[in-house]
Every structure is written in structure tokens, then in C-alpha cells.
Image (cartoon, rainbow, N blue to C red; front, side, top):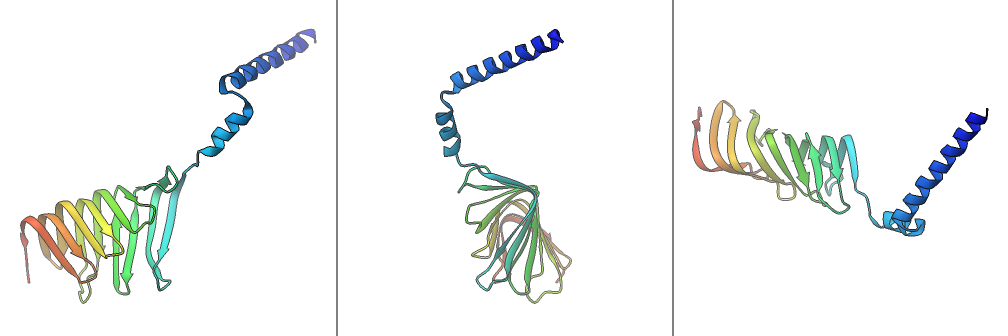
Length: 186
């Protein structure tokens, strides 16, 4: 019984000493609390979904990602395994996937990297267009996709490879910048 009482008293004394040294090391508790409150935290979400609507109230895009995080408020939004369903106009739907991505605070653009795959049905076409590259910049406001790296385009049996790309999704125009080669069936 006396041993238990002695153990309890020693434990309380050790705890009090630890708290005292912690308090002395960090300064007063008021300044520590004010320091903690001044830093605004960001956020992180796992298996998350963001939906942005256009001016007409209809979804402009839906972003699903394994992880969405914004380490600092008003900072860059980081994406892990993003899947972006983008529909700038009725009948013009594109799905983009990548290993990583990032968006600015206003989420008007997306930078996708690592095994980027885009798939969509251009206006007036019966064939799905597939675009594969390592980097892709999507400007959702301008409806423009660009890539500075090697690109492969498959569409209706046609296959093109090139370096650098500019795809005007609004006007259904695709341009490869250089080193273009491929097979055109039509």
C-alpha cells in the first residue's frame, strides 16, 4: 500500500516537472496560444470530390481525387490521382486522369502530370478522341488544353504522335507542334 502511494506521488512529481520545463521552454501559455492561433492551417481531404458550376448553374467540372490538399490558405491546391470530368458546353464532355495535379486557388486551370490521359467526343464526331502525354495544362475558362511534351492522339482509327500540343476544345481544333508522325486512315 505504501509502495503504491509512493509510486503515485513520484508519478505526479515527474509529471509536474515535465509540465514546468515544457512551460519554461515555450514561454507563457498565453504567448504559445497566440503563436498557435496566428498560423492558419490548410486542409487535406482523402477520396474527395469538388464540383464547380458554370454561369448557367450546371456543372462545369467534377474533380475526384484520392487526395486533395491545400497546405496554406489561398495557396496551390495539390491533387493525387485526379480524375477531372470537364464539360464546358453541352455535348462537349472530357475526362482527364493523371497521377498528380495542381490548381490555383481560383481553380480556373489545372496542371496535370504523370501518365496524363484525356478522352472526349469532339463535336460532330462518332469517335472518341484519346490523348496521352506526361504533362497537360487545362485552362477551363478558355477551354484550351496544352502540353509541352510528347503527345499521342488516337481518334477514329487515326494515330498521331508529336511533341507539343494545343487543343482548342471550344472550336474542336488540335495542333501538334513538332516531330509529327502517324497514320491517317481518312
